[in-house]
Image (cartoon, rainbow, N blue to C red; front, top):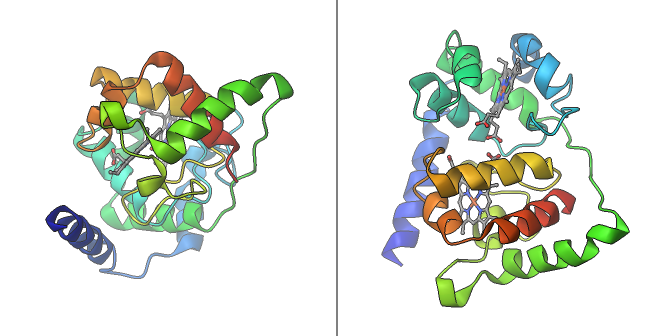
Length: 200
Ligand code: HEC
Ligand code: HEC
């Protein structure tokens, strides 16, 4: 219970810190011109190496940009992109992508078995390994919960898999995600990534 209360307090604090000025999505679209080549004109990227940003929960993109800028989230490319951005720029860009819609993604018939394995893990977790159900934080339909818990529905499976492997290896720091990903096998990560990408 105490953990839940402090979690909720953390969420409220994060939302407050983004509320210092009214984020402007139109200004954000202008400021995101340098991002189009990789993340797409409307935040739907055309390559699994680059995450789609459209429809992300408000607050998450600004927080990740701040983490790239400070080096807390290590990625040489994105660190360079985030360097010139002010907190206000980040909030505007955040508002722009949050206002866009992510394109739904399907799966082919030969992927159904793997996706079903992912569905069980996503909805129930793994009690014997103390892996919590992913949907507790990312939502039953993968839409995320503002502002800390990102949307995973519709994201590229390659990107989701790469991030889970990065949490597992420690290459991406994550207080909540690292211990979870650490207990998953590469096969379970593949199944989860496919399932999450197909959520709508
Ligand atoms: C040359 C390609 C490229 C450009 C240009 C680029 N990005 Fe990225 N972006 C990436 C890659 C690759 C990643 C994945 C990084 C990782 O694996 O941690 C990423 C990750 C991100 C993430 C994290 C998404 C998530 O779901 O956690 C955000 C937010 C982001 N970029 C925003 C931006 C913004 C805003 C700009 C423009 C100011 C931008 N990017 C420009 C390639 C690019
Ligand atoms: C206790 C809450 C919680 C649970 C349970 C949880 N997550 Fe997460 N997840 C998070 C948070 C918080 C982040 C953002 C991490 C950050 O800010 O760097 C995240 C990030 C992610 C990301 C990266 C998304 C992106 O756009 O970069 C993926 C993929 C992910 N989680 C998958 C899962 C899967 C699969 C499960 C179940 C096995 C799961 N999560 C369970 C809290 C949770």
